[in-house]
Amino acid sequence: MADHSYDYDVLIIGAGPGGYVAAIRAAQLGLKTACVESRETLGGTCLNVGCIPSKALLHGSELFEEAAGGHFATWGITATPKLDLGKMMAEKTKAVGELTGGIEFLFKKNKVTWLKGHAAFEDAHTVNVGSEKVTAKDIVIATGSNVTPLPGVTVDNAGKRIVDSTGALDLDEVPEHLVVIGGGVIGLELGSVWRRLGAKVTVVEFLDQVLPGMDGDVRKEAGKIFKKQGMAMMLGHKVTGASVKGKKVTLTIEKSAGGDEQTIEASHVLVSIGRRPNTDGLALDKAGLSVNKRGQIEIDHDFRTSVPNIWGIGDVVPGPMLAHKAEDEGIAVAENIAGLTGIVNHDVIPSVVYTAPEIAGVGITEEDAKERGLSVKIGKFPMMANSRAKANRDTEGFVKVIADAETDRVLGVWIIASLAGTMIAEACIAMEFGATSEDIAYTCHAHPTHAEALKEAAMAVQGKPIHM
Image 1: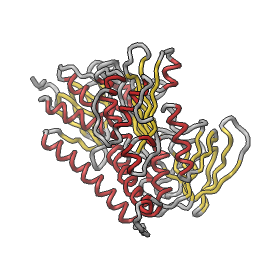
Image 2: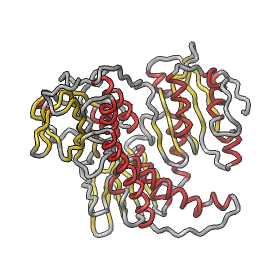
Image 3: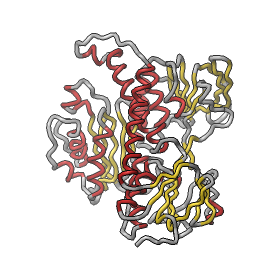
Image 4: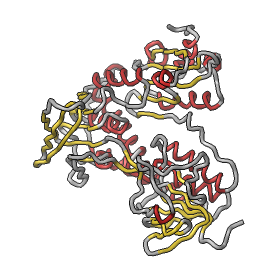
């Protein structure tokens, strides 16, 4: 039954992948629901200036490179493509508009009230949205994250010289030389977009390998692939300053350990050193909440904060900053608020880098296994030996399966392949059901498909792949 002493049963702050999904699910479960969002459009960072526009540009730039850079030629197709960057950007914007509009439609269909503006707590049940005061029995904080600033390097998206990920999705010219600060997912994806369209790209990464957090074999192989594609890699370096003069940016760079200072010139710079939780202006203290030393709001297993009627999901709470993790938490938190049981298995959250080839992983890395003192068996299978990849002339990468040495239960899967992001879903299903490597090995996979490489890697755990 609705509690009429409050304006709403549930108020969700933020309409990104976590917030909008929580709002729709709560409404489906019969709760009177409102969602606060300050952007002009729903969908948060992901739909507006993150996952969706970046995938659109990755796709468009990949087509351009295939036509211009060789894959067409391999198949006897001659083409001299001409880039209309304005048209490519317009198509990206159209895709974003269709998806954000789709969420607005779903809000109306499910009777979710969209409160436009910024939310600030007055107390644990009351939130100010602009000049309006709104009360709710339960409140979900789903405010997401924003770009981590880099001292000495001032981002100015309007100036279009030193940009963050938002600005890099909206440049009006192909950079002559783009320096990407940070060798993580966002930097490598957006660096790939502009490299394919003709930019010289240099990646400056503080660590000695790209893609922190991923499996060591994947990181090593990915580094080689990006280098081969023409990205210059300055690993073990940090940027200490940047100055803009006209159309040039001068960067000072030194070794991560200090010393060996040098300057390099670029036409454009992308700062992508990570993201941090969004809690500014929320007045958390008025609700009796505080953040941990990483700026996150701590929650329990049910997504409840230290204040019983306030919950947290997505990038603003601990865990990987991924849209699909936030979505799953959005469904779970709504179910918990409605008195059902909402659970997310945080051990099975896949991560994907949408470069070409794609890079994907789920579960633990080989390094994690060593650190935890786990005894594991590992099976690897190269895409070079996969018949579909071979037929497509697209053989970069491998599949790696990590299984418990005693029980054979699959603990992690890591893939580099043109379809890695799709292939990883099978690994997630397998792990969610506690599958062994043998379960995957003895499941019939259609031939010829890229997915057979996962079957063969699972067979390799026991040391018996067929095609190797």
